[in-house]
Image 1 (cartoon, rainbow, N blue to C red):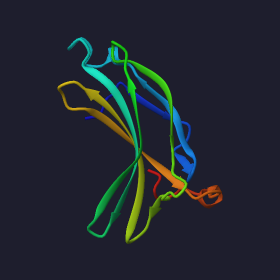
Image 2: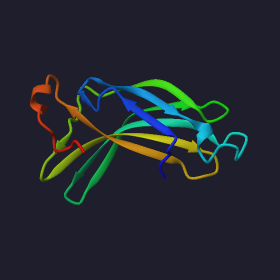
Image 3: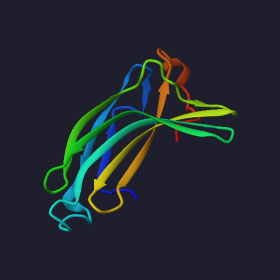
Image 4: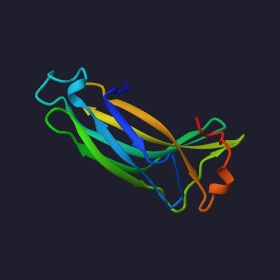
Length: 141
């Protein structure tokens, strides 16, 4: 389930290997349907950077980094974040036999209920690879 009160603003959805994804995470807790339900139904917001590989009949996922941010009494949050991309990659790839897809997931930890989350597709490119990606890339959605 998606959380309409959660907003993730990235500086860029593209990073080089060895670089960082930076942004701002906001949650307006008093505006959602969880406000007033319990003393504090929302416990925290977790950001997870991962890549997923898809191939012929096989899928794998690897978590690269994770951050957890506590919310205030009303479930609000407003903070900057940064998550590093490993120097060894892998880079994003969209081939016939294999695909490497990067994503940033923001998950709202809700007490005694199903967590709410949103995912943002990302693009990881080789070092000094900006010139290779001057046109729209197949992984950009």
